[in-house]
Length: 335
Picture (cartoon, rainbow, N blue to C red):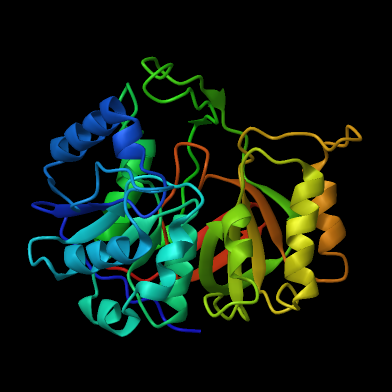
């Protein structure tokens, strides 16, 4: 386990470099992208875009080698304080074999994203890169018709500034409403009252934080980009799946032997859940079936990933979870 080395980015006068390693969302949804850039600027941040940000080439904005070089270019730009992915998708891990991991580690600039950008964060973490944040992205979170959620922005700003230490706070409301961008999204999102974070299995765990999208990071199994997970508190989130699919994905973790080495597990609020073909809809039971005989605390319905508002979570940070009541506390940062 490596200690988190999240670089501190001052609260003001930041320059954010926008990078599009997956879906070419800025080109596909220009109105939403324009709103995102305007909102980032409203925060007082200067926005720098990689050359292919608004392009489309094959499944993405550019071929993978060019996307990797664009990340290098943003990190090498002395003006850029941190890199923010524009959106997720399915192809971000194509860039992994083209990245200069040692050089990226030396830059010590935060890189932020989630969804399949989780694969990039995990690969960088595996190769010794610090300053990695599982958090919001430009088009998806900053491009809302009614502006980004203050909870989301505050968590990102504090994490970038190294001020993430302390107990995480639950939001009062949440949503998994996701109208089609640039067609149906010129409206406020439909909100729900936030139920409390829940314990599926009680206990106390301390370890280091590893957060990602369950659907995306499964592609890391069998390759060189999956971090060692012993001692980790694993934060996993998903969207649009049923309990049978969650069961299958988690069973891959179990069969690999990686569940037994965890200190604890935290699951995100379920975004747009489905039922199994049988009609079975109990995600709690599905999770507990896979963790049978693995005696670690398990927490559910935490606000990160594909629901909003969302927390920013620094990979490698020390984390303590307790379950009676449920609390999640991060260590590190500055006062």
